[in-house]
Image (cartoon, rainbow over all chains, first blue to last red; front, side, top):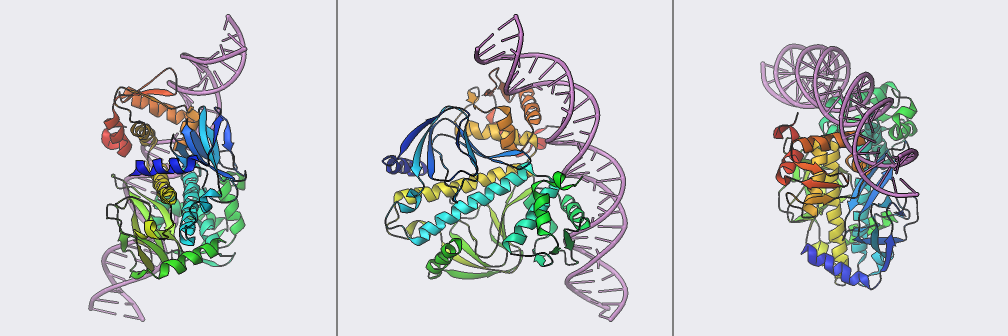
Length: 220
Length: 220
DNA sequence: CGCCTCCTTGAGTACGATCAAAATGGGTGG
DNA sequence: CCACCCATTTTGATCGTACTCAAGGAGGCG
């Protein structure tokens, strides 16, 4: 079933494909590039990675022949695609994702957009777990929720999770989460209310700084 | 644009929706359940998690109102969805994902399936980075590639990555990867060839055991 | 042959986990 | 309303895993 599906993709796409040969250690695209195409890996190996400000890198996906990639969403690349070996890819216009099939409903387009966004968000999570310290993770989580819930400095962030859930999201122990919250509290970036699920966000921007590089911000 | 997209989803889906109210700490579904529906979170907070054999848990996604979930793919749930607060969700038949829009092409269906599979794979990666030891990660990576490339005991696994890439995929340092490979070599599960990109896989099943729980297998 | 890159091994350190105990708070029943 | 109990969080002490820094080996290529 899966195989049949992939064969179908191949057949339908091939009439619109441009084939590219790319050398070892060459980049197909890099973070920030405009996202004009998506790809199908024909031969070779490609890795998708993200680079953090402090130079630490996380590879979020390893691609083998048959894999599609480069449609993670958005106008610009949020990932870097590097060829690990001499590689052949088929290249397609990104617009095809919306155009193919005249009867494609808005619903389907929206679902696709949603899935692509999920993929992006999961990649962010991957980077966090692979390449951020405990303090950076806790700061990143609070920052994420503050942004998503549009919470300004001085306002209350409510999240109904217990510390156990908090820890299991961040890949840490309960105790470490608690300690990092205390650190952020002592630094004046948040206040922890008696109701343990509520925090006052005192300084969103500093949370972002800590999230990006706790050491550069001045923590230990 | 994003907002408009989501509003469109809402409007189109609502005619087919069943609304559910679910209490705090109740499960919407658990790993292994048949996957008959997908959902839209109307109110409350839901978390998607995976439990490892040794009892360690990783939350792979936190859902807020407006988020869609439950279409990660496959016949059975690979995630557990737990309500963190009293929650309202709209429930839809999974079949709608394939049926809606008569003009939906095989290409679009295949792309959707592919995206859903990617999401699943990324979740696996997330669990690895959040809740597996260095040795378990290295074993898991070799096991993954051996399976994917259909390599049997005694055969050669070629991966054109350098140790740097290996490490950045696993969220480890180069030195740690090297040490863990040596451990696996000393235990007789692999052999490391002079050409550093090639390994002989000596015992796929044991690699899987180590990947699942290195301590239970007998390491350190 | 010699240089350069990559990998491995070694020594010491540090971050976060684990184990243990104290503090805080919520809920229940008297 | 208060006293008690239980669950949860915080804090403390110790331990262990993986990181960092450093040196040594092994291949590849000119």
